[in-house]
Amino acid sequence: MKKENIVERKTDLVADWQALIRTFIMPDNDAAKTRLVKYMEQILFGLHDFLKKHVGITEETSLKELSQRFSNSLINENPEKRLADVITDLIEDIAPHAVNVASPYFVGHMTSAIPFFMVHLKTIVAALNQNVVKLETSKVLSVLERQVLAKIHRLIYRESDEFYDKHIQNHKTTLGCFVEDGTLANISALWVARNSMLGPKAGFEGIEKEGLINAYKVYGIERAVVLVSRLGHFSLRKSGGLLGIGNQNIIGIDVDENNRIDLKALKKTIREIKHSSRKTMIFAIIGIAGTTETGAIDPLRRLAEISAENKIHFHVDAVWGGPTLLSEKYRHLLDGISLADSVTIDGHKQFYMPMSCGMVYFKDPTIMDAVIYHANYVNRPGSVDLGIKSLAGSREANSLILDSSIKIMGSKGYALLLEHGIETARNFAEEIKNRPNFQLITAPELNILTYRICPLHLQQELSKAKSEQRNVINARLNTINRQIQILQREAGKSFVSRTTLKIRNKSEENEENIVVLRCVIMNPMTNMEILNEILDEQEEIYQKHFGGLK
Ligand SMILES: *Cc1c(COP(=O)(O)O)cnc(C)c1O
Image 1 (tube, helix red, strand yellow):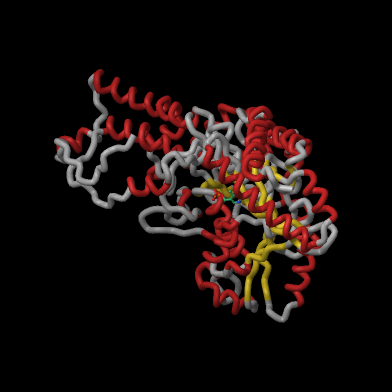
Image 2 (image 1 turned 30 degrees about the vertical axis):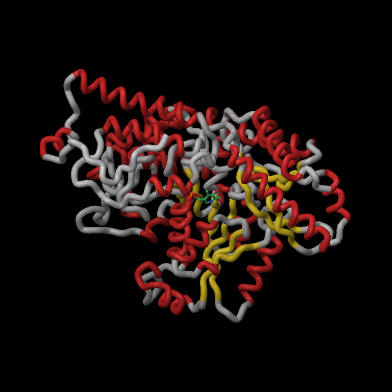
């Protein structure tokens, strides 16, 4: 169904004062009230029905066609539509072309189904429209936010009752901060790390005030670097750019065969930096608790020890894997996280919250003083305003959603979700191993795994082949797997993602670029039956398009 282009659409609607005022006053007659409730009903259920129909990105309406439909840059002087029509349009015309991330067949990305009550909670956040930048526009929500921060801080650091009694509502200290997303959370953590490593000293007022050049001069260095496994999220390189140290100074360390940071390589790099003629400060070492591509967890405890020995800020990017701490059964996978100076976690990933909710936590409740800012009209020195130590200015009271959902789910409810993801991923890996047309590339440590189509006879050939031959076979397999992922996506029934991993060849000392299919299991409705269907479909596509491959 193609709608009229709205470019020059004329209606009898006019923008006048009376009409305007009506949009600010809740109607008090029953008919109008019923209508508004009906709209909300349409949003909850109408959207739900429409979203159910497709999975992933279908080519039914191409991106090109959609782009043409949305190419009007004019703003009408008078209203184009009434609220009712806008809502109907959104439900009938926009939603069907969105991506059904809630489908149990959508297993390719870190965005998934959310419990339906999240929509209610998000609506309350919008209706209250509090701004947590300052107490004067948020009051109880600033206090509530501090409570949620303490709950998650406790999950990570397990400090004593006395510690939390002292800091939970103490406006002189801070346990962490809500930000928009994982990217801003990582940037915040490294901002704090940079400022505390290059802080004020005799004759110097600190890097935040005097800038990089003076800081380097005073500290007698030519550069500052951060060390992280080369599987670090690209938000870390962004931080390097923003913080002025240069993104080439976010140094990627090699990984071992399990995709964890190679500790030998890390120590070697630290030694080289120390003995380098270029005076260099390592201001942070980062451990990843769940890499974006494979879900691998770095040896956090060892990284903490190495950081402590060298007096370096230790940051853990637990943006993905952090909530695993809620599972008694699997929290040991993150052993050592409590030694981190800072930890980042996303609410909109494994806390199953709607977009966007990033969080950063600090072991030392005073360390955020390194990024304190005041203004005359808000956030005055000594005030309770959360905006004093936050990268964002105005922001929504998302902590209300997290606080409520923790109450609704309990840690056990979350644990069930997380355990389902981890265990389903493990069963899925077994199934992949049992199918002769598939090869498991990275086994799941959490709920992410990668694999590819690679028929048994090619697996055997690869294990015997010399590197030149291997390259030829792998190049062919890369093309096939790339195609299979695209064809499956376009068929619109299921969706897995795709990435390219550098895999070290065991027999020889070189690395190969392998295109893999990537699965993220984070929907409680995704089960082995569905995953088998997804593999069947990939096998069918393979047979149909590449069946002659020998
Ligand atoms: C997703 C992710 C990020 C970035 O989070 P956004 O919310 O997308 O900005 C950072 N680190 C890791 C490990 C991630 O998985």
